[in-house]
Image (cartoon, rainbow, N blue to C red; front, side, top):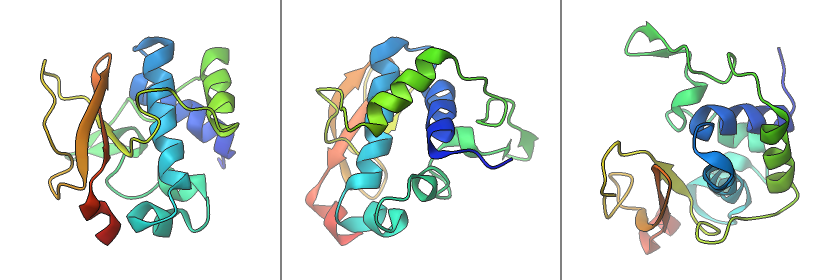
Length: 148
C-alpha cells in the first residue's frame, strides 16, 4: 500500500513517540521535518528538495520503518500502526511548518532508555545534545554535519 506523506508522518509519529504525549510527538515530528528542510548536508541530499518519503525511508534511520530487526519480525512498525486523529493533527501541524520550541533545529533524536543523554549522536559526532523531551534526547547539528 502506498501511503501519502501525511499518513507516513502520522504513522511514524505514532510509532516513535506515541506514548510520550503531545509534546513528545511534536518534538519527533519537528525533527523529521527538519531533516526534510535542511538546505545542506546528508539530509538535504536524501530529501532531494523536500521529499519527506525519502527522509522517512532512509536506511537505518527509524526503527519503526523496519519490518525485521536482528532477524525477528518487528511488530512495532509503521505498517501496523493505526494513527488516531491526534497523530494526524500533529502530522498536519508539522507539515504546515510548525516547530516545537526547544527542538526547532534538531536533526536527531533517540531514546537512550536511561536518565542521561549522550553528549554526541550519532557516532560520527554530527549532532550535539540540545534538549530532552520526555524519553527522547534531541541533537542539533555540529559543524561536522556540513561535511556529511
